[in-house]
Image 1 (tube, rainbow, N blue to C red):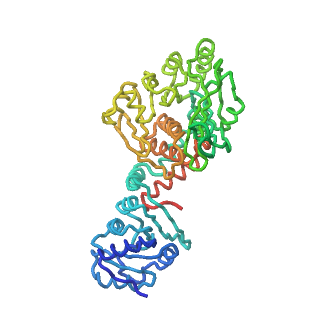
Image 2 (image 1 turned 180 degrees about the horizontal axis):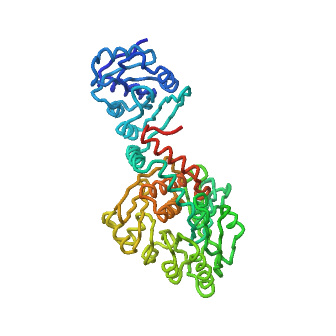
Image 3 (image 1 turned 45 degrees about the vertical axis):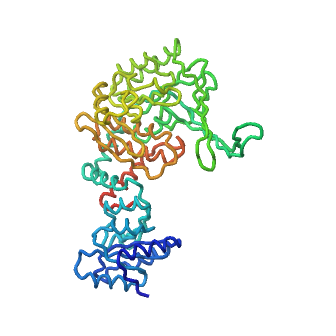
Length: 499
């Protein structure tokens, strides 16, 4: 049965009625000027997951009436309308299809920037049928908000550095000798099932199901670097109470060399979070810690452990969580002896209001969240580029990076100003640990003298890997990061996703 030819406004009204009935709609957009070029395999494929297939034909080619008739004669097509636009973006915004389908060997080589942006707004799914020799590959993707910005960014990076430049940058990082200094933290997750309100108290009662412990803090930062640098050391402290040293050492990946001093009359830091097992929502956190600073023989032991490490390492990454390990003596030694010093001073529940980046008078690189930067500057409203430049000048830093959650990162360098990278994550399960991953990769990339493009891509892809897992249950893998980078840069040529 031939498809029905409608005016665009009539088609919009008809699809609204069909959508209310729960019907799934697929949009195909093309010139339809040649019967032989119609991809029937694409249409048959999307028919299996669609109730209606709608075609819009652009008016900017000659022979509009004939082209509309050709489209209407295809058995798989239900409705055809002409649209005064070359791109499908107008059709997507007006018709709000569940699926926008195209063939990479037909009229479309892939969605345009405008089409990706339109799909991210309407919430539909992209579907493409791609032919590679004799192989036919189906790709499906639901564009996130910001897909257009990511596509433009990928095109810019592909043009400036390409995959060859990125791989050369990874190789340059390989020989760096890296030390990670800061607090050891054990992250525990206790999964529970909500039973209901207590019979006698105004309290929610949960049934414990299971628990999981992970190496966090400097353990996580070091683990992220294990695939990227041949030599990685850790300098940290464990408590004399509930030390848990066996677990801590087992949490480190092979090849990492740890040095642990003891904090007397204090426990090894454990941050336990109670999680609703069904929704994965955090209900409460209980921290086992002593945030008093190292003193006396404990501080002497930490300084003694730090000195030889600083002498033999090219890069020192300080993950300072503000729990008392790094005292003024430690700061002075790190600033004076580190060949390349990268710093993060994390804002958390135990140190809010007094733990800021200004604790370190000097650093070659700093990486922190925008809120941490603004707290340090005591300025909520200043333009971010100005704050980045002021902070870099004050610390004598080569570069300063700010993470901005779903907005990506902004990196200030002396010679290039501010370079913005959009968020590259497509799946977000939990944000804990993402900042440590960004710190790890961006620090060594900056120390290796890599361009802002490479520093930003590596840092953001590392963060994207971590927000897709629970806490620090996994560390950054070089193979996955290279694969993700390849997909990102390939999208600049064909703006769809790899299967």
